[in-house]
Length: 335
Image (cartoon, rainbow, N blue to C red; front, side, top):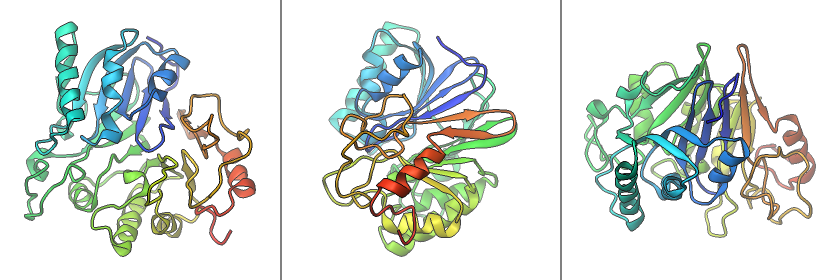
């Protein structure tokens, strides 16, 4: 097991999906496990062979499909698993995940717990406080049920939202795929969600009803409450429509936070219709799904935590790359 003197958060370029690693002073946490081998490659790259906690925000495949391969890898030890139950998911992949958990429990000392607000204070593996802001199952209910206002809850409505706090400073908010109903319920119950970094939900896609105005309102409300200096969209260069992130969402981020740094893990087709002719030189050395195909924008992001500030890589070189080489970057108005 590899630990570190100061905590680090890695936001992985896994294409369309979510996956992050918190490397803390006394242990390691994986938050969501998207498909592909980038997670396992990154764990090996930074020397991690033991995961103290795996947290799955909700039961969509782009957040958990890689979990099955991770459990099957005999070179990596997993101690605790935390996942939201989801009564409306009946896909073969979701069933395979449940079977993988059962098999892991049979083979070793792997515990399994739900992931909700009751777990705050019980998840820390070092100096970072891991806060589960949502879901509060007593107040919000379960997917397929109703909230206290009688609205039907989807898997996204009760997606886990995780806030990492270091030295009393909110350093990152991982918003899962929380939707409009979920965000409203969260803000009715939690007053403090400010964080230096926001991992934006839905990869910048529709946030609920699908209307442009609703997407803008959701984005503005979320950005006002979090007030980050960096917004990350964990995206892939998808062939099918719609492309991510949506233009009205990026515009709303900029309108709400004019000085924010926006970073997509991969180049959106809206921003760069053609792939790059050469691999960008601003990327760090961490594994990135889009590197070989020259799809990266920010690639895998490493967020370094210190007593007084949150720094990240790539940073200024990424801004320069976007300005000089991304033809119609959404994050640079009027380019």
